Image 1 (tube, one colour):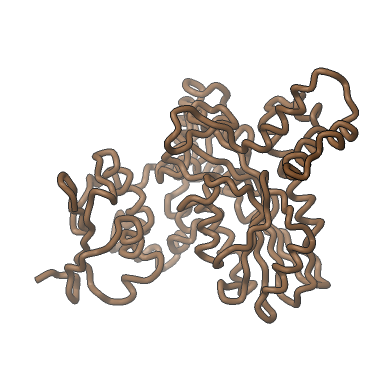
Image 2 (cartoon, one colour):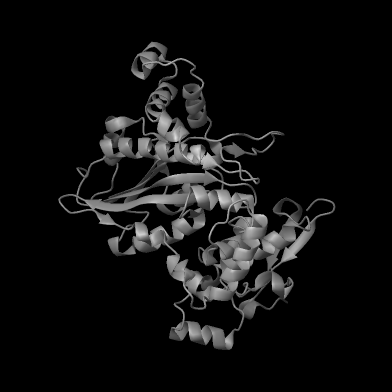
Length: 419
C-alpha cells in the first residue's frame, strides 16, 4: 500500500443508510417520482419502480435526469447488463445449458467500450466461456455463413450455442444520444462511430441520387464494412430523418440490419442442442452507470422444433402496479434472494432484519467509499470471516469483495474470529 493509502476490511461498517434499500412503495413512490420528473426532466417518462432500485445500485441514471428521459424514451425496456445476465441465465436453466456444453458467440461492434470489465459481453463470457467474435463495425456478422459454419462445428457433442447480437449507441449525461466520454479524452466522441458516420454521409448528400449507383461507385475493398452500412442506412434514410428521435430510430434501423444478417447465416444443423439468440441494442452509459441493453429478441431454437420466445423474461412491469413493492421482490427477480413470503424469506426477515444480498453490499459500500477517494488502487483488503468453503463460492460476498478490491489478507479463523 502506497503513501496515503487505505486499509479496508469487511469488519468495518458504513452508515446504515448507505446499505439499506430505499422505501419502494407503489402509489406513494410513483406520485413522488412523477413530480420529480415533471420538475427536472425535459420530457416526462413514466416512473418505474425497478429503475429506482437500479439507480440506487448505481446501475442506472437518476429518474429525474435528462439521461434517464433519453434512455427510456428512445429505448423502452432497456435494463442494466447485469440484469440481462441474471435473468437470461435463470430463464435457460430448464434447457440444461452450461459453460461446459455450450459455446458462446457474439455479433457486436468491436468498439472497446463494449468489452470493458462489467459490460454485458464480458459478463456473458465470464459465464459461458470465451466468445467467438462474429461482428464487424456496427455489429453486423460479417463472418457470414462460412464463419457460422466454422463456429458451429466447435459445439461439444449434443451441446448448444448462445449468441449475443446487436448494434450499440451511447447516451451522455445531458441526454445527448450518440456521444460518449471516453477515458483520456477531453471531448466526447461518437458511439457507434461507424453507424453515425454512415448516417451523416447519407444525410450530407446535397443532390438527388440513385443510392445503388452511388455506393457501387464509392465501394472500396479497403472499407467494405462501412460501405455496406452506408448503403443499407441510405435505403431507410427518410424513415430515420422523419422520426421524432432520429438517432434513436437510427439505432433501431442498425438493429434490423444486424438481426437480418444473423438470421440469414444461422441454422440448427450442428446437432440436437439448442441455439439461443439474444438480440437488442447496447446502450453505452455515462459513469457510474452500467451499460444498458434493450432486449428485442430472446429465442431458443432446436432442430425440427418450433422456436420458444423468452423475451418476457426481461419485463419488470409486474412491479409497477398499485400494490406495495418490496425490495425483496426485485432481489428475487434478480435471483439474489428467495421468493417473497416463502418460508426461507420469512425466516431471513424475522431473524436478520435489514439483511441484503452480498452484491448489494459490494455495490453500495464501493460507491460510498469511492466518494471518499477510497479505491482498489490505494487500498488493501482483509477479511475476518469463517474459512468455511460455502463463504467463498463464486458470487459470495467475500469472493465479490476480493474481485473488486484485489488480493485479500485472511484474518479470520473458524467462526470468523481473529486471534
